[in-house]
Amino acid sequence: MANYNEQLIQTWNEWEDITGSEANDPDDFIDWAVANNRLHTKPEDVRKIHRRRLSSALRQVHRVNDEGTTYRAKQCVTIIEEGKQRTLVFDVDKNGTPRLRQKAVKQRREAIANDVYRARSDVDHMNYAFPSDEPIQFEMDFTEDFEERKAMERYERDQKDAG
Image (cartoon, rainbow, N blue to C red; front, side, top):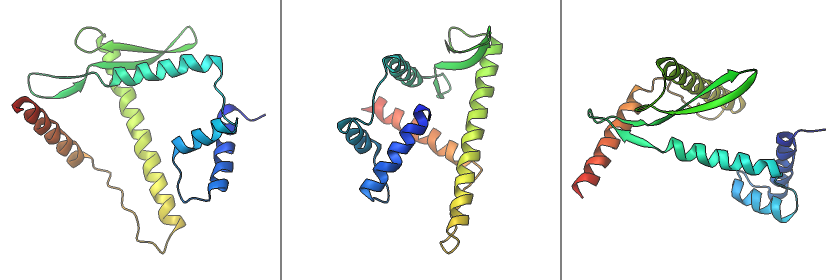
């Protein structure tokens, strides 16, 4: 029997065939799937929904230090305790041991590296699958992206403070 994700993907594929569109909006899919009794929420999923919303809210807690750097104040780290995986959240200004802070940074870097690997693999495949198209470029150096975002953040903060 297919697991939930496999069932969801099968339903999405069916919906794609029905729409015949080049690309589809997940919100439209959810509307269709609920209306056609193809998408159900199990009682235990309510806890997952609240957890996801809490995680999202905690990720939005930003502060600015004396040097003007905006940072996420709530950090998370995944640990294995008594054979069970747990996610711990700590406030970087109030809590967290040096070991937790280092582990959080290491895990964050690994997640970013995985995202970059997957994105580059996707681009490589698209270039392979469509060799007559102009090749899609994927820049691996993010230094300029970082500096642009940092400058934009400071500009927006200055505009807010001036207004």
